[in-house]
Length: 294
Image (cartoon, rainbow, N blue to C red; front, side, top):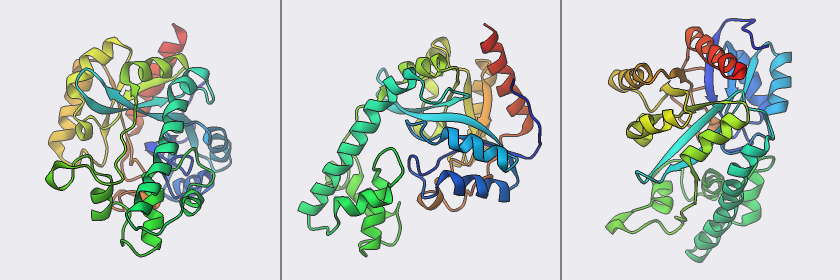
């Protein structure tokens, strides 16, 4: 049975080295304890490989770990990306694997091709070097490539001008960056369905960042149960208020979190900097119990 046994900060959006954080599961849990977090959702991109370890470590550190995921999806009706969070999912569930495994495999291969393109353009990094930064994770990400470039002196930050130049969909003159390779993401409705099949609660991540508000009515009918209101990209009161209004209109629970990526993230928003609050945590738990009873 799900229950709140401790009260502190509630961070419902956090990554680990299983996807694109510089920190291991153990390091993230230790950081959560230091930050005074009592409830932490681990929501790595398209993988559940660190969830069981996180849950066990959380218990030993007095932290309730909510096993989650963030699925890289796409709104093929409106032609824009979408991220779907899933809370209280069953790790290694076949419905999640069916949707996410192709994304992970495709991402890894695309990263290999990106490194080849960069080599052809004169950047002196190796695939083995890049893979070393992703050791223990599900795939190589652009951040790992940038890490290699930074260590070779080509830039001074991971998500700076060089990242935009190399990986942009449309750079100078409208041409994509030399290392831009598009991925085929999961359909957003399929991602929502997969999370529900895995026993989870599907929540739309940072709709202000990806401009997904127009899809909320349709996705609620498809089984969406929540909307992320508190997020670093919703850094204006007006953006949070807009998300709250959609939550009220469509009877969606409200979540939030720091979207923590360690050294690959925004240093202005450390772990625990965005608190979803106990009221919203209770609403999430109640929605989970309600759906489980159906």
